[in-house]
Length: 165
Image (tube, rainbow, N blue to C red; front, side, top):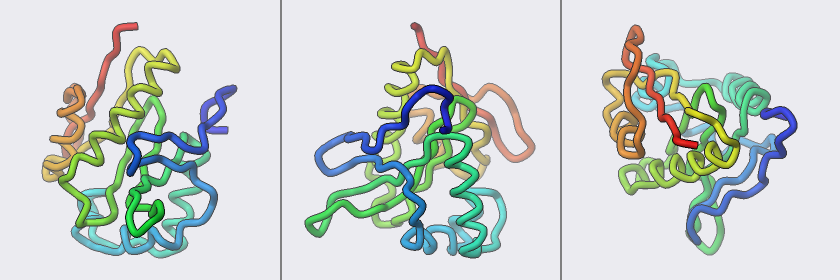
């Protein structure tokens, strides 16, 4: 029940090989995404790998406060989770966990699909609470789909994207 009175789609098909699948409680495949100190620095500014318990708490929180999806890419004859994203008006955290798929535009495609959802829900704007100064790939991803920095944070910037409704 992340968005009051709005059902969450179970699948958002973005392209034939790319889709979002609603969180179903299973996440063991995602543990490696939150174990790499380099990735953790981009995600939360720290360097300590997440324990399985912490990943579980994180996903339960995100699922309770937004629409949590796994990003799935079709390969090997089936859709496989390669990252995650949470849709909510106040924030739009995204992780492409599979390193070999980074830099291929998957993040932008996912964000564009969720921007369409925001427009359908008649949100006047949508936000990213913080992108760190050192997370240049995320800065490029969000700027590339129309987000602009609007407020300085301790370690970076908050971004927003306004819509004409």
